[in-house]
Image 1 (cartoon, rainbow, N blue to C red):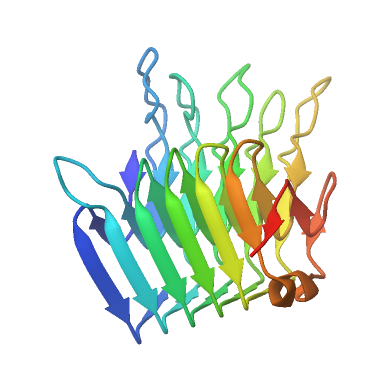
Image 2: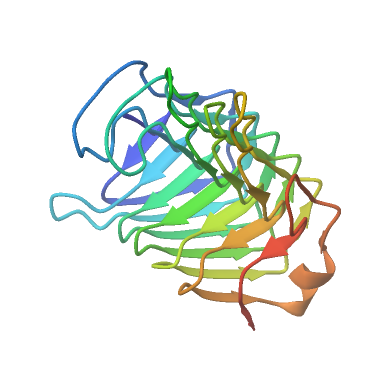
Length: 242
């Protein structure tokens, strides 16, 4: 598992008025671990945030530019759930982490699922700019997301590409206000002969059923012009108005 291409935060941190470009969380290839969930997984091209060993896993990000960073799952890995996946091209908020982002710009970041080995499906890619997963809380205010992308891995069946800008799962909480989400893409992975291509859904934002999500009217008006290879170009999921 590759965790945080530049920063791994397990305590309390603040980042202000900074730029991060061309960082990578690049997972290893051809590893195996029966039932293991972290095999070949690349998370947080710039930063992975999670509480561990009693740490807070809390981070505040203000006035930061994230450009052309990548979270890349490894090739041909064998294991349990999440094997070979890429989460959060710039930022990954994981397992009860708390992340607050304001006045920041995300452009050209990518989450890329790993290619499956012989006879294997491709892995999923979640959150081209930011992934919020496994019981975490993400607050986004006055930010710009443009030109970010998820791409599912190649395989017997292609992996899914979900949430070109932001991905939030069914265990987590997300609030987005005053933000622009445009020209992001969610692309499903290609399949081999006789297989099925992966889903590409939620080109702008993808939220899984069960999560707590609110989006304000300003963001809804600027949530446009995104592309998904399968369905729901701009948004997939259920939300309330903030």
